[in-house]
Length: 239
Image (cartoon, rainbow, N blue to C red):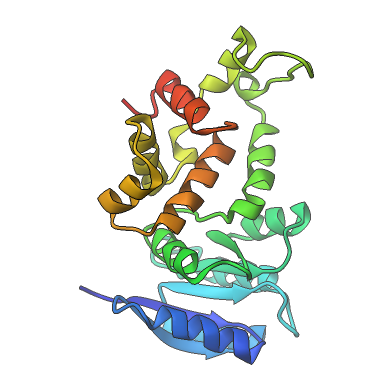
């Protein structure tokens, strides 16, 4: 099995060493290049052409968003073959999040992410899906809800019960808002499986399951697992 080739662009040495150490714990991953600033990083990416670039948003010479934009622009002729970008940052403000995705970032993680979740994020990104940190998933969800899709827009009076007929508007859900793994977790939630059972069936950690569950609740605008299951069934996301 071919390894996931990863490059790191991070100006803090300790952070970079920590990420490298975490990645190298997995046999299916290898670190093929490192850089401490955007200029060196972009040159390195063009040379080694890794599968994934983990990019710090706060580089000293040029921010990671601009680096991402330049990299994606250079790969515009072959977007499917280009390096995928996983942004790593301390910023969870709306402007930074939306700017990163507008520049072409594939995934977005906070720097306090756990190692297990970082490894999961790399795998998800490598497989062509977006991994969005639970801490900022709400921002992306809100932006999606503001897009011009009237059937997805709902203004709910403050005291309207959650189970009222007005909730029906949210039951039209685009399946592509959920990653393949999240759909698998959602199916098991509908079947009534606990986090421990889901972890066992999907061969992932309970912590990773919890992250998927939080992402699912955010994306479905659900308050709990039961509400998420009802919406998933009503919308046809799962059977």
